[in-house]
Image (cartoon, rainbow, N blue to C red):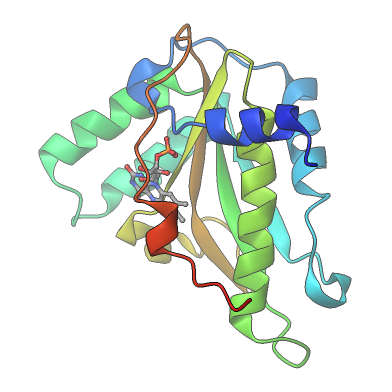
Length: 183
Ligand SMILES: Cc1cc2nc3c(=O)[nH]c(=O)nc-3n(C[C@H](O)[C@H](O)[C@H](O)COP(=O)(O)O)c2cc1C
């Protein structure tokens, strides 16, 4: 039998968007705890390809400035981003180190995604919420993010404090339409 607590935690995980954050700061040791859990994700050949760049306080403003410098971000989007950044406590830039001689890229993306899932489920049953954002402009931030040639950015994980309980579930399609048994 599987542990019902684990099923409950997995099924309670939600994307909590910055509009629901209250602007409070998350303690740094909590951020480290989340990232320790991320660091326990599995990876083929133990390459541990996840890399995290953490922005808060003034560095968060600098990241925002860098994004809005980009002319492809409309005025409306800029305003929305400003609100999201202000309400967020930390923005974690999800990065991945390729090991192209060792593994195909998809395996490293898969491992990094598992690390992100660990962060996400670690937020369940707390007043910390987060969501993974994958805007197109991340590709224009390579220099700002000080990415090495063999590193890529897979998006931002917005983290913040919220007062909501029992966020609504985004319904999933029928499992039985997604599985095929070979008995
Ligand atoms: C790889 C990945 C990228 C995502 N990118 C975005 C995004 O750019 N914008 C957004 O609003 N949500 C994004 N999401 C959040 C999903 O839309 C969300 O997980 C989905 O609606 C299910 O909601 P839930 O997380 O509350 O179960 C992303 C999720 C994943 C896993």
